[in-house]
Length: 363
Image (cartoon, rainbow, N blue to C red):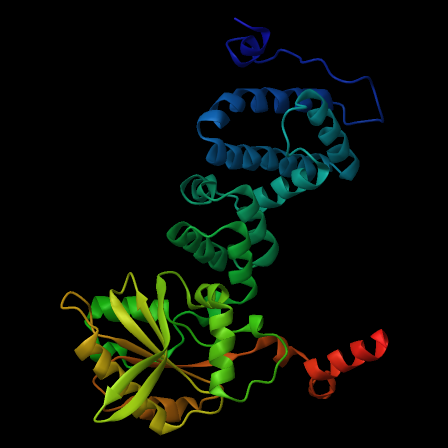
């Protein structure tokens, strides 16, 4: 049996590992605490190979709890954490994660979740970086738990989780004005209510002041991956400007999707201005045609989504009354353009103006 395995095996728990030479003054029992950390880390390494993520998160919570307790009881400061970091890095050169910054994250993690049960049952299923994102970007505990469940439900990466938090998804999901409760079976209605949101944020469209439906549609299609991300999990793109011929007249659906979980087509109509009651009638007609022509017998009935630049809530609710097809009305926002002061928006140069300036420079 190798020396390494002996350290992880049945040696006495009070074995003192070699440590660095004496440095700056430390708490009287610092060496014992450092030794305890080394034993805990060593005993966890084999488990980490078998269940890397959950064991690592649990170990970080464990170490963070000790740091938190020692700070509260003995007044440990930044210098002690710096020394602890240096000693751990020396003893475990092949392991990452013992920087002073990460030790402080461990402490914050333990402080945020004093009950180990929720760490074991939920948070240990997230990566450490996802847990850090929840710590840094979300202050409310219940909202952190909400996002943690969404990560597990949809398999979000750390970057996707960060984007969803920054966009305030928890404030937008389930806020859509709709008639789902009266037009869909209960289970389908509840699911649709949670899938759609309001408003939809199209920050990827840049700083353009979009005033035509066609420009909005082209912008969304040109950034289809980001658009699908904003729509949410389960949407599959079917087509744009889908042609319909009705009574010798041509009509075109702006965007057509299929939702894999709802098992139905989703017709999306785009409006670059405020809600007009006539928009609902047009959308309802498109949905009827999709149900008659495209819908398979195993599909659920088509859902419509009207995206407008601005809506009046009372007016939107009245617009939906009397329709027996499931329709939702939401606003869309070009966040980047909206965040710029109005005087700055008007002063931005056009593409033609930029090209003209570049031509001058070349000449």
